[in-house]
Image 1: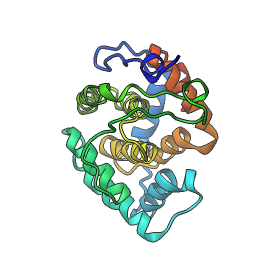
Image 2 (image 1 turned 30 degrees about the vertical axis):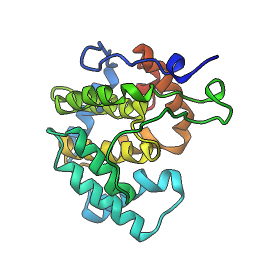
Image 3 (image 1 turned 135 degrees about the vertical axis):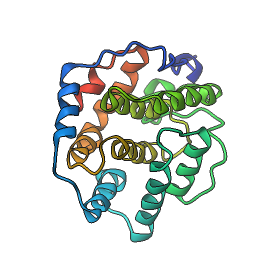
Image 4 (image 1 turned 90 degrees about the vertical axis):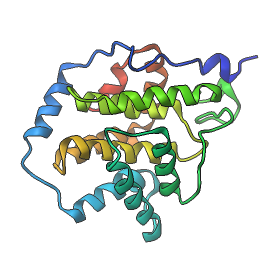
Length: 225
């Protein structure tokens, strides 16, 4: 009988992984850095709404969006020195509930008939604290190639699936916080966020999560090409 422990095997450490970055990622990074067009505060609000809520929910209320804005302001200031507690706090603010620890049981993504039919099987819950510690070290160490590091970090957060619910929303918010930290309010940030989390890319994103378990990042980076 297949179980999560069989399919959702332990992930390799990000810090020890040799991840080949395609040439177009460097070009994308330079395009963002050289962009002189800056987005206004109202455009940032629209970006937060579109990426964190709008693309996948078809709209949300004002009170729900205020949680997005608050969570973004909180985690953006933590970039560079994020702790596991910060991630838990951000998730709590974003979802309007108190989350004190990462998930304490196994979960499946997609499908309704168990492990065999799941679109993606996250790692066993027992490995989540160690994986999040590795994730935190990786995110705080991004420097030379931030665009590639950000993409890898956000995909890994989705892959770990540290919470029972709301992992996608937290990952999308984290993407924008990281992009803003390293690139400011440049218009190119929107394009990266739109490409990475457009609703049409959902199946490609799920297949990417399965492939990068074997350190094959081709599908993941293809989303941004």
